[in-house]
Amino acid sequence: IGHAVFGLRGRRPRSAVSEGARGMGNEMMGLYEAIDRRRDVRAEFTGAPIDEASLERVLRAAHAAPSVGLSQPWDFVVIEDLAVRRPFHEHVQAERHVFAASLAGPLAARFTNIKIEGILESTLSIVVTYDPSRGAPSVLGRHAIADAGLYSVCLAIENLWLAATAEGMGVGWVSFYREEFVSELVGLPPGVRPVAWLCLGPVTHLEAVPDLERHDWRTRLPLSAVLHRDHW
Image 1: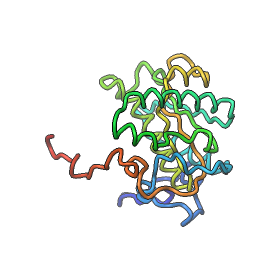
Image 2: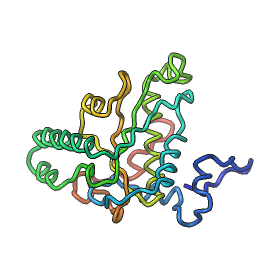
Image 3: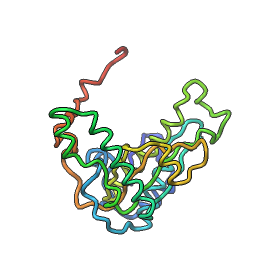
Image 4: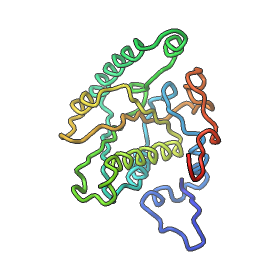
Protein backbone atom coordinates (compact mmCIF):
# COMPACT_ATOMS: atom_id res chain seq x y z
CA ILE A 1 0.00 0.00 0.00
CA GLY A 2 1.42 3.36 -0.87
CA HIS A 3 3.74 2.45 -3.77
CA ALA A 4 1.91 0.29 -6.31
CA VAL A 5 3.41 -0.83 -9.63
CA PHE A 6 1.19 -0.68 -12.71
CA GLY A 7 1.45 -1.91 -16.29
CA LEU A 8 3.28 -0.38 -19.23
CA ARG A 9 0.28 1.62 -20.44
CA GLY A 10 0.82 4.31 -17.85
CA ARG A 11 0.49 5.08 -14.20
CA ARG A 12 -2.80 5.12 -12.40
CA PRO A 13 -3.94 8.58 -11.22
CA ARG A 14 -3.44 9.20 -7.53
CA SER A 15 -6.53 8.53 -5.44
CA ALA A 16 -7.55 10.07 -2.14
CA VAL A 17 -6.04 7.00 -0.50
CA SER A 18 -2.62 7.32 -2.12
CA GLU A 19 -2.62 11.09 -1.58
CA GLY A 20 -3.11 10.48 2.13
CA ALA A 21 -0.07 8.22 2.28
CA ARG A 22 2.09 10.48 0.10
CA GLY A 23 5.46 11.36 1.53
CA MET A 24 5.48 8.56 4.08
CA GLY A 25 8.15 6.66 2.10
CA ASN A 26 9.44 3.54 3.83
CA GLU A 27 7.17 4.05 6.84
CA MET A 28 4.39 2.32 4.91
CA MET A 29 4.95 -1.37 4.24
CA GLY A 30 4.37 -2.82 0.79
CA LEU A 31 1.23 -4.67 -0.26
CA TYR A 32 2.68 -8.18 -0.24
CA GLU A 33 4.29 -7.63 3.14
CA ALA A 34 0.96 -6.41 4.55
CA ILE A 35 -0.77 -9.52 3.16
CA ASP A 36 1.87 -11.75 4.75
CA ARG A 37 1.88 -9.98 8.14
CA ARG A 38 -1.90 -9.51 8.50
CA ARG A 39 -3.30 -11.31 11.52
CA ASP A 40 -6.68 -11.70 13.20
CA VAL A 41 -5.66 -9.91 16.38
CA ARG A 42 -7.04 -10.76 19.81
CA ALA A 43 -4.59 -10.35 22.71
CA GLU A 44 -2.05 -7.90 21.29
CA PHE A 45 -4.05 -4.64 21.39
CA THR A 46 -2.54 -1.86 23.54
CA GLY A 47 -5.55 0.46 23.68
CA ALA A 48 -3.36 3.40 22.65
CA PRO A 49 -5.01 6.25 20.71
CA ILE A 50 -5.23 6.08 16.93
CA ASP A 51 -3.98 9.05 14.95
CA GLU A 52 -6.97 10.63 13.18
CA ALA A 53 -5.10 10.87 9.87
CA SER A 54 -4.21 7.18 10.08
CA LEU A 55 -7.80 6.20 10.82
CA GLU A 56 -9.04 8.25 7.87
CA ARG A 57 -6.54 6.56 5.53
CA VAL A 58 -7.73 3.15 6.69
CA LEU A 59 -11.39 4.08 6.14
CA ARG A 60 -10.62 5.63 2.76
CA ALA A 61 -8.88 2.41 1.74
CA ALA A 62 -11.98 0.46 2.72
CA HIS A 63 -14.23 2.86 0.83
CA ALA A 64 -12.01 2.53 -2.27
CA ALA A 65 -12.88 -1.18 -2.63
CA PRO A 66 -14.49 -2.44 -5.83
CA SER A 67 -18.23 -3.07 -5.66
CA VAL A 68 -20.82 -4.65 -7.93
CA GLY A 69 -22.44 -2.02 -10.11
CA LEU A 70 -20.49 0.67 -8.21
CA SER A 71 -23.18 0.28 -5.56
CA GLN A 72 -20.76 0.78 -2.62
CA PRO A 73 -23.26 -1.00 -0.35
CA TRP A 74 -21.19 -0.58 2.81
CA ASP A 75 -21.32 1.77 5.79
CA PHE A 76 -18.81 2.05 8.64
CA VAL A 77 -19.99 2.61 12.21
CA VAL A 78 -16.99 3.70 14.31
CA ILE A 79 -17.55 2.80 17.97
CA GLU A 80 -15.39 4.17 20.77
CA ASP A 81 -18.01 4.33 23.54
CA LEU A 82 -17.53 1.58 26.13
CA ALA A 83 -21.23 1.83 26.89
CA VAL A 84 -21.74 0.23 23.47
CA ARG A 85 -18.76 -2.10 23.49
CA ARG A 86 -19.40 -3.61 26.94
CA PRO A 87 -22.83 -5.07 26.18
CA PHE A 88 -21.47 -6.43 22.91
CA HIS A 89 -18.61 -8.04 24.83
CA GLU A 90 -21.10 -9.70 27.19
CA HIS A 91 -23.13 -10.95 24.22
CA VAL A 92 -20.01 -12.43 22.60
CA GLN A 93 -19.05 -14.23 25.81
CA ALA A 94 -22.51 -15.79 25.93
CA GLU A 95 -22.13 -16.98 22.34
CA ARG A 96 -18.72 -18.37 23.21
CA HIS A 97 -20.40 -20.60 25.81
CA VAL A 98 -22.93 -21.73 23.21
CA PHE A 99 -20.16 -22.82 20.85
CA ALA A 100 -18.08 -24.38 23.63
CA ALA A 101 -21.04 -26.54 24.60
CA SER A 102 -20.99 -28.09 21.12
CA LEU A 103 -17.39 -29.30 21.51
CA ALA A 104 -16.01 -32.41 23.16
CA GLY A 105 -12.68 -34.03 23.94
CA PRO A 106 -9.40 -32.52 22.73
CA LEU A 107 -11.19 -29.88 20.65
CA ALA A 108 -13.02 -28.57 23.72
CA ALA A 109 -9.73 -28.41 25.63
CA ARG A 110 -8.04 -26.48 22.82
CA PHE A 111 -10.87 -23.99 22.57
CA THR A 112 -10.55 -23.16 26.26
CA ASN A 113 -7.18 -21.51 25.56
CA ILE A 114 -8.26 -19.58 22.46
CA LYS A 115 -9.12 -15.89 22.88
CA ILE A 116 -11.88 -14.96 20.44
CA GLU A 117 -12.02 -11.15 20.72
CA GLY A 118 -10.30 -7.94 21.79
CA ILE A 119 -13.41 -5.80 22.13
CA LEU A 120 -12.45 -3.98 25.32
CA GLU A 121 -8.67 -4.05 24.84
CA SER A 122 -8.68 -2.46 21.37
CA THR A 123 -8.87 1.29 20.86
CA LEU A 124 -12.18 1.19 18.99
CA SER A 125 -14.47 -0.98 16.94
CA ILE A 126 -15.87 -0.62 13.44
CA VAL A 127 -19.10 -2.28 12.41
CA VAL A 128 -19.16 -2.78 8.64
CA THR A 129 -22.66 -3.12 7.20
CA TYR A 130 -24.37 -4.17 3.99
CA ASP A 131 -27.27 -2.21 2.49
CA PRO A 132 -28.80 -4.24 -0.38
CA SER A 133 -31.09 -1.33 -1.31
CA ARG A 134 -28.21 0.94 -2.33
CA GLY A 135 -28.36 1.29 -6.11
CA ALA A 136 -31.40 -1.01 -6.27
CA PRO A 137 -33.37 -2.19 -8.12
CA SER A 138 -31.00 -2.05 -11.10
CA VAL A 139 -27.64 -2.97 -9.58
CA LEU A 140 -25.50 -3.76 -12.60
CA GLY A 141 -24.07 -7.27 -12.23
CA ARG A 142 -26.21 -8.41 -9.29
CA HIS A 143 -29.27 -9.76 -11.11
CA ALA A 144 -27.89 -13.31 -11.39
CA ILE A 145 -25.80 -13.40 -8.20
CA ALA A 146 -27.77 -11.96 -5.32
CA ASP A 147 -24.79 -12.15 -2.93
CA ALA A 148 -22.52 -10.01 -5.14
CA GLY A 149 -23.28 -7.00 -2.95
CA LEU A 150 -22.28 -8.92 0.16
CA TYR A 151 -19.04 -9.96 -1.54
CA SER A 152 -18.38 -6.27 -2.24
CA VAL A 153 -18.60 -5.50 1.48
CA CYS A 154 -16.08 -8.26 2.18
CA LEU A 155 -13.68 -6.61 -0.28
CA ALA A 156 -14.01 -3.36 1.67
CA ILE A 157 -13.23 -5.24 4.87
CA GLU A 158 -10.11 -6.77 3.32
CA ASN A 159 -8.95 -3.34 2.13
CA LEU A 160 -9.45 -1.97 5.64
CA TRP A 161 -7.54 -4.89 7.16
CA LEU A 162 -4.54 -4.55 4.87
CA ALA A 163 -4.42 -0.77 5.23
CA ALA A 164 -4.53 -1.06 9.02
CA THR A 165 -1.68 -3.60 8.88
CA ALA A 166 0.34 -1.23 6.71
CA GLU A 167 -0.29 1.50 9.29
CA GLY A 168 1.15 -0.71 12.04
CA MET A 169 -2.22 -1.53 13.59
CA GLY A 170 -4.10 -4.73 14.22
CA VAL A 171 -7.62 -5.82 13.29
CA GLY A 172 -9.71 -8.55 14.88
CA TRP A 173 -12.92 -9.77 13.22
CA VAL A 174 -15.43 -10.84 15.87
CA SER A 175 -18.00 -13.31 14.55
CA PHE A 176 -19.50 -14.69 17.77
CA TYR A 177 -22.71 -12.67 17.64
CA ARG A 178 -26.30 -12.67 16.44
CA GLU A 179 -27.06 -10.12 13.75
CA GLU A 180 -30.29 -9.00 15.41
CA PHE A 181 -28.41 -8.10 18.61
CA VAL A 182 -25.84 -5.94 16.81
CA SER A 183 -28.50 -4.28 14.65
CA GLU A 184 -30.41 -3.18 17.72
CA LEU A 185 -27.30 -2.23 19.70
CA VAL A 186 -25.97 0.20 17.09
CA GLY A 187 -29.34 1.25 15.68
CA LEU A 188 -29.10 -0.07 12.13
CA PRO A 189 -31.97 0.84 9.78
CA PRO A 190 -34.30 -1.99 8.71
CA GLY A 191 -32.80 -4.12 5.94
CA VAL A 192 -29.18 -3.16 6.71
CA ARG A 193 -27.08 -6.13 7.84
CA PRO A 194 -24.04 -6.06 10.15
CA VAL A 195 -21.41 -8.04 8.23
CA ALA A 196 -18.46 -7.58 10.57
CA TRP A 197 -17.58 -6.22 13.98
CA LEU A 198 -13.91 -5.28 13.69
CA CYS A 199 -11.66 -4.42 16.63
CA LEU A 200 -8.99 -1.91 15.61
CA GLY A 201 -5.98 -0.33 17.24
CA PRO A 202 -2.24 -0.25 17.87
CA VAL A 203 -0.68 -3.55 18.92
CA THR A 204 2.41 -4.70 20.79
CA HIS A 205 3.24 -6.93 17.84
CA LEU A 206 1.71 -9.17 15.19
CA GLU A 207 2.23 -12.87 15.76
CA ALA A 208 4.44 -14.67 13.23
CA VAL A 209 2.06 -17.65 13.28
CA PRO A 210 -1.75 -17.19 13.31
CA ASP A 211 -3.46 -17.96 16.63
CA LEU A 212 -5.45 -20.96 15.42
CA GLU A 213 -2.30 -22.59 14.07
CA ARG A 214 -0.42 -21.91 17.30
CA HIS A 215 -3.23 -23.53 19.28
CA ASP A 216 -3.38 -26.55 16.92
CA TRP A 217 -6.96 -25.77 15.90
CA ARG A 218 -6.28 -25.88 12.18
CA THR A 219 -3.25 -26.06 9.88
CA ARG A 220 -3.02 -23.77 6.88
CA LEU A 221 -3.42 -25.56 3.55
CA PRO A 222 -0.74 -25.10 0.89
CA LEU A 223 -1.77 -23.40 -2.36
CA SER A 224 -1.33 -26.70 -4.20
CA ALA A 225 -4.20 -28.22 -2.18
CA VAL A 226 -6.74 -25.69 -3.46
CA LEU A 227 -5.46 -24.86 -6.96
CA HIS A 228 -7.30 -26.24 -10.01
CA ARG A 229 -6.79 -25.52 -13.70
CA ASP A 230 -9.55 -25.50 -16.32
CA HIS A 231 -11.66 -27.98 -14.30
CA TRP A 232 -12.02 -29.01 -10.63
